[in-house]
Amino acid sequence: MSNFGNLSFSRSLSHNVFSEGSLVLSTGQKSIRHSVVCEAAPKIKADSAAKRARHAEKRRIYNKAHKSEIKTRMKKVLEELDVLRKKPEAQAEEILPIEQLIGEAFSAIDKAVKVGTLHRNIGARGNSRIARRKKTVEIHHGWYTPAPAVSA
Image 1: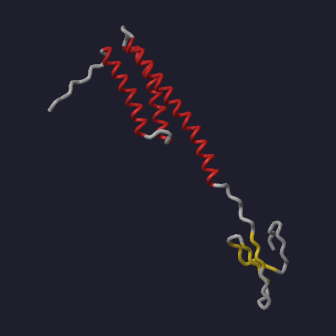
Image 2: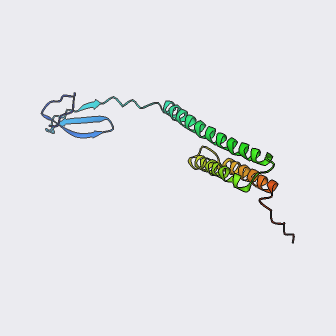
Image 3: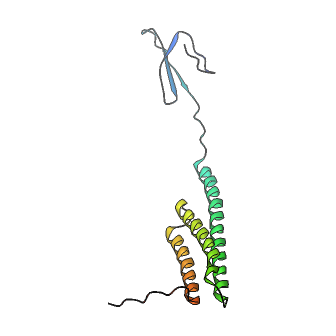
């Protein structure tokens, strides 16, 4: 007979069914039917509300860090573009380090959208603001000339 841990049964009993936490045992003789029902205590499951709260707190901290990073990167880019715009004799090469910052900001925004920290429309709006501000600076200094609108 197999060992059932801390439960002990007579050797003359054999187990027939073990399902849904109940163990039904009966003797081998058909005239005398003895059955023993053993109900194991159910495992205590983690409270789902508490687990959801723990996970929500982890995600909140993670999301807060990513949003803070995005805001910081956007602020740096926009400040650098403002400084460049106010500079009277700026050269076209001065925008290259700013383009590096722009790439990093776009990457941070796109990653946040990908993992669900930001909604895709909010990410697109942030990218658009940065690109629009860059184009404004380029137009201001004459490094970029927009194509004339074609009227039909």
